[in-house]
Amino acid sequence: MRWGFICLISFIISVAGHAQQGNELRKSIYFGGGSYNIDEEQVLMLSNWLDSIPNLLDKYQIQLISHTDPIGGREFNEWLSKMRSQSVYDLLLQKDIPDQFITVKNWGIANPVYSNQNYHGMRMNRRVDVILYPIVY
Image 1: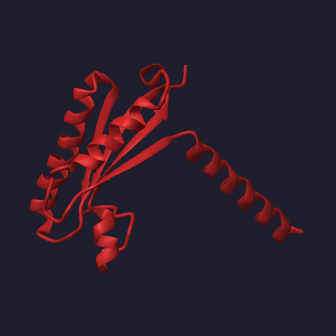
Image 2: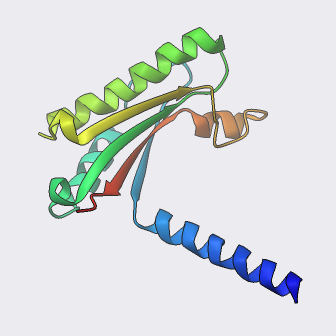
């Protein structure tokens, strides 16, 4: 009986976590190693994505979360993380999104989502996530 209850609670927590994640919208901008330049294809992709969201500023708060791979050491990657998020931030300002709608978190090499033990993981960690969180009134 107790095992069934634990499974039920685990299921409810799992479903609640997915529902919460389902309310946010997310787009990632990827970078080359050591770079903070955004290629034109990704500029266009981000612009089209933002344009496709009706009443964006009435419904969402924007958070930029920047990540790097560990190549180059902590100090370099802290700087690189800031430069990457600044590049995306500048694009949002060019889209006439006021800065008060944007928050930034620069993780650098801390808290990688993907494994930095292989090339694919490191490549996936070279990014800025643009996350739209619903505004709750």
